[in-house]
Length: 136
Image (tube, rainbow, N blue to C red; front, side, top):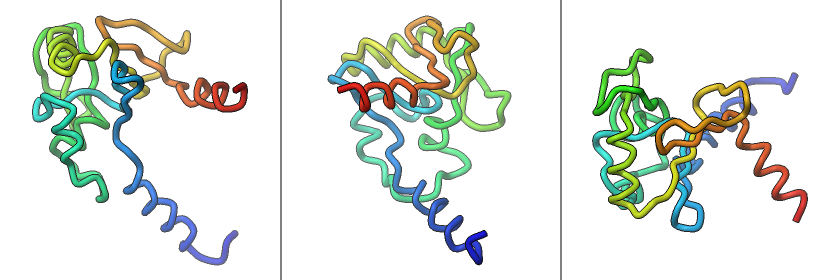
């Protein structure tokens, strides 16, 4: 439709510049996936070289692919990328970083949101942003 693959390539390259995480009011940690055993503090994330293609393993990969789990501690992810992590991990991360909430969007939740230990899942979080931006 656009003559060649250049437009597609530009957009896929653009993803390398997107932020991995966001912090709202210094209390809500937002990310796509979940936590990483290599990341104890928000400063660890701030020190990443963000402008790169996401590696197949390591903390950047974990932040995009990890999932919360009913079991405590860290586990091997069935996705073959990232980890699973329990409530104990979430609570420790929140305590260490003075956070109240972790917001993530990696899994479908039929009601739109779900509380699971201290994690708020939001599959359609972009709708909240759209509503907020357009109703100010």
